[in-house]
Amino acid sequence: MFGIPEWCHHHCGKIQPSSTQTDGIDCVFESSATRIEIKRIRINECSCWSVFYEIKQAQAEWFRGMIIFSAERLRGAFGLSDESGPGGDMLIDKYGGDAAAQGYFIRYQNYLSIPGPGTGHDGDPNISVELTDEIKNAVAALLLTKSVSN
Image 1: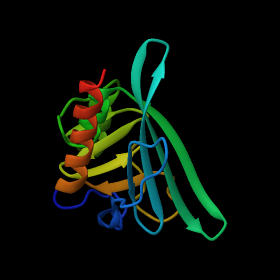
Image 2: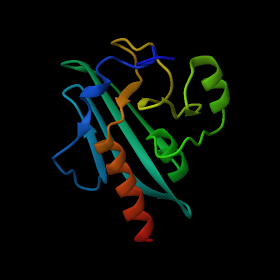
Image 3: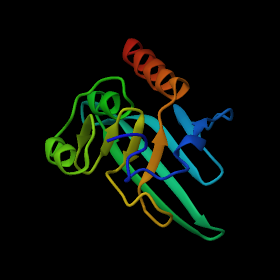
Image 4: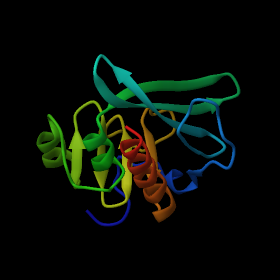
């Protein structure tokens, strides 16, 4: 693979950390057509991360999704480790990449697609993100802050 993977939308580099804070949301990344919200949640006794994403296709058309990530899976998705999850090897063999978990994400270098590989075109319900140092640092700080406070 060279450059941007074909499963990554070409507007992936427009997503940036948001300057506006949303109540109850720990981290927000957005562009004019996309939004990712990361929030710490507890399910039974497990501490997890809710990753909500939205892709606006037109004025009244959008895709929305939400996936529950473990801290390890969040690290792999956002380029803080190369840890893959279930089905990750199959996705990497088929589409190329450095880390993946089926139904969660695929990542090649600094290109991430949630919840998995897509077409890379408009209308695709997968959100693509170019992982800048700013985005990686925000997720790393979030994971560190929240793990220390437990």
